[in-house]
Length: 184
Image 1 (cartoon, one colour):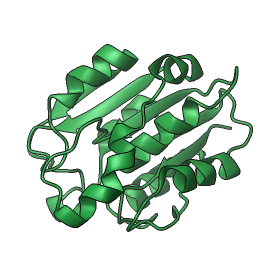
Image 2 (tube, rainbow, N blue to C red):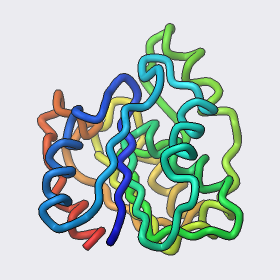
Image 3 (cartoon, rainbow, N blue to C red):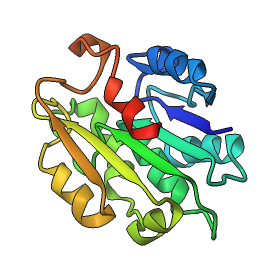
């Protein structure tokens, strides 16, 4: 049975945005779904978020699929770079980033470690055979130019959607049917 882990965004939880919809859809298709609430979501710390994913998934295998939203994508990449000779099936990254724009002054010290701590892209690529990234042309925090970086650095398949914002419920996004196509 395929196991799917969905990692939410900064300031969110497992009941935010499109996660409840996706969880229900995948459960109906007989996937085993895990939607953890990440620690200290309003002030996410790399070690705590990656540690939580390592705790939930200490021995991943090729039946595992990881789906992340925004900082959840960062968490997944940082988790994957720590796997030694273990592979998972695929990852789907929604509004992933290496750069950010439009942050408030109080958000800058929280974002800084995530932006400045390097990711070993080769190790991420070794840990999965399939990477899909979804971007929006009007995302207020993720520069659309990051799409090229994900192609270049991770060999990811990328899609740029029109007018999806940051793929949050306040942007009107409570479903992302395309994810179902990627993980079938």
